[in-house]
Length: 294
Image (cartoon, rainbow, N blue to C red):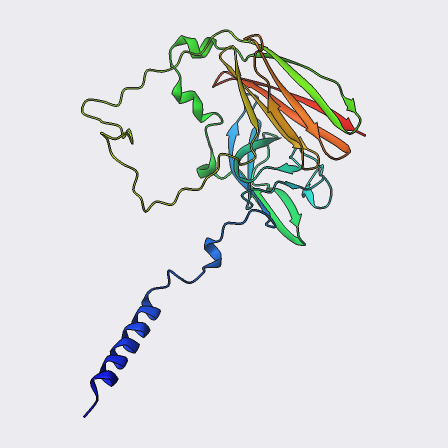
């Protein structure tokens, strides 16, 4: 006859085996790791759109798998388009995480079934984005337009004007100010959003629905992103397009309403390119500013 202690020990062992087989919550799954640094960049084709002259825009974005570290890949064999000019205006500075429809490449009306390939080589591995004119991949080039009025105000809308003042050469330790002056026609008018009768949007306030406690939240408030500033109903976005990491862009306050400015600090010498965009939500104007740091 088995002793009670033997039976208890056997039951405990069986329970432990059962839980070990079915409960993998304590086991690390590499696919669920979140990496701050040391990862790669995957370029991707984001779709194509029509131009009024019959040509096409091929839109590209990228995923920097890091949550913190930006990556710099200079134009050349490690950052190239595989046909035509290696340099098609692609960035060399890659912000962390997903960045959609970052830039586009214009292809001719007779592009047909030709492929356009953007290749990045990082840590010895090649990552490609392949685009072609597949019908299912046609996109609306500016999906934000649907948030604005569809009356004549949108048809009459003109892109904002944009001028940028700053110097083009600095010496380390280097800090400079770039100032954008904008003007806009006040169009388009925002569309009134009507969710219909009986629709109650979640508020996440005490009297409304609460956020489930089992939903993991990724704290991304300090993640490196392009710098955005509002001026005269226009959003001005400052993006480091090319150049080494370690650049800081800090927006300035107490400016005239039609101006937006950033203080740029550099840590390394080299050639840098910044892209400044002024957008009224539908139409936009873009300027590129080159800066040499010695």
